[in-house]
Length: 389
Ligand SMILES: *Cc1c(COP(=O)(O)O)cnc(C)c1O
Image (cartoon, rainbow, N blue to C red; front, side):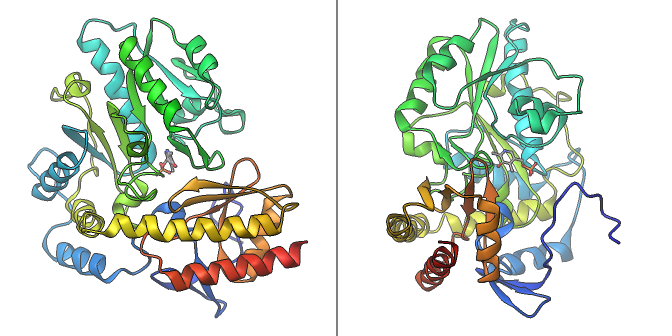
């Protein structure tokens, strides 16, 4: 009997090693892994460049307190700001810590300008921002919050992509609107660029900060470094995590100089492990690869090919597949039938995928996926559709 708590419904497979897009099961089978730790292993498994970087660092220094200067973190923060909208960065160890920090940054900004009552955070109903007490109430999901009361105050909700509902939910005390540009857990639901631009405009007009949660869709996953870049908007605060560490725990919140006003004061926030030299060094190594000339162009090209092939499969299986969703390598196959069974059959055919909301099969290849691997996935999905019909 396992001594692990049963808060996960674990699949009955384990792996002895990974390499690139593949995982090798203890059952002797080789799987094409299009889960990749849920968009975490952005450069695939056992990436030799990342291995070199982490090995080098583990011999030098693992951990020092944030009471001292950490050069690897200075470097990573500099690089994250030089290429983006942000002026300041604060590091954490996970996505939910990053979204929590984002909420704190927004509230502390209005506090610092003498508007402490402007502290409410407006989120999408049934969104996902992590599992801490604040983050689950930010999500507004009944399932995630059930039994975890009392309800954390300070969160309001609007309906996905519904401008009327958004406008109606704003009050004079709305400090920030927090959205995922593409809802990952929620079913790979993509906001239109015009909706995102509308939100930005509303935030400008009403002195509201825009928090864009890029924990899942950021760091190159959509073919741009950030998903919000597709809409050509500039957010004020952006939590990131998953893909930045390539498999090593890391989180960060990026912010403009203005938004950072309240948190840029010693003692306002902190983390013991956040920003440790190993995580920072791995983050830098991931950026070395993603910032390489042509890297994101390749992600875009590969993903266009894959979307095209998936749409052909959809057209040939109109009763099974409702929609191919997503941008870049953040992909959802929305099914008519129960997706759990389909995912199981894909696994039997040695392609690993994972569920998302709204009956969606989530497909997350590593950003370094090649054409032959995509072709293999297409072949497996076709075969699985045949077996399913
Ligand atoms: C995964 C995720 C989080 C939470 O990240 P953890 O590292 O699991 O805490 C937050 N927001 C989004 C959009 C995510 O996909």
